[in-house]
Length: 382
Image (cartoon, rainbow, N blue to C red; front, side):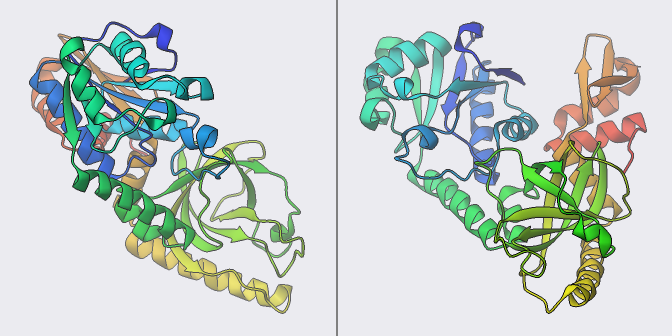
């Protein structure tokens, strides 16, 4: 997948099939739509293109409403690459961009930059100044500029919208398993490890205090969670607390801190990824530090039980492969080159692994492809 962040650097696309939107979370509803985009592109021997915006348009023209996004830009790119889109174009969104007339948006933005063969768009999609442009205008201008318009039905648009709302509501309520079912993967969040008061270390439960790297990222509701933690490309179990720490702190300032099991390394200043797997309990105030220590041991026992019983070694592999997408391959006429974390680790003659190559090309999901590559290299660590 090629990613473009500057409209002046776009190539000349051939038989482009494009869709436009924020695709926040890249959940299962989005995946269904993007499969349609890929199928249309394949049917005309064209290229599939997703056009998205950064920052989120609501942060610019949302009337001051806060934006809580499910996937920051880098996360979104990883998720989209897993779905096999040919190109993603990240358009810098600004108030000036939003002030284009609808006709100018079509001619100077869509046609000029993408020369589309097919535009796939929601029945209620709005664009241009005052959101005055719609699918009817696209239909009116399609013959003049030589593109077709494919409508995403009301039902599918509503399904996608409902899924996004359900995911946000579930996360705010701490229902991370429900969110994972709708997303198709565990909700994840990156954070920078910073120094805290180090109280956890004094009671036997050292924690990494996190500052979420993007302030628009949705943080799940307050409480204690069983989590997986990716540190330096290694996967660990842990328990995480989101809240105000009422037993030991009276500032009412929200903190995010994770106790990583069987881990004792200095990671201050490093970025780690949290995968939310289970909700353990709501945050509560205890009578003192001793009572808190007893509860933390119960929390750890419960977290280990949940992570062990529902996320065995095979599930750990799945979480690692789905979230990190460490493996990739390139195919030439005679060779297959396999990469782990962008480093070349194996080269094969295509003729010698023909059967495996067919499996790779027919893999129905990114996870299946990742698992094939992992077995092929023998490089799997988890």
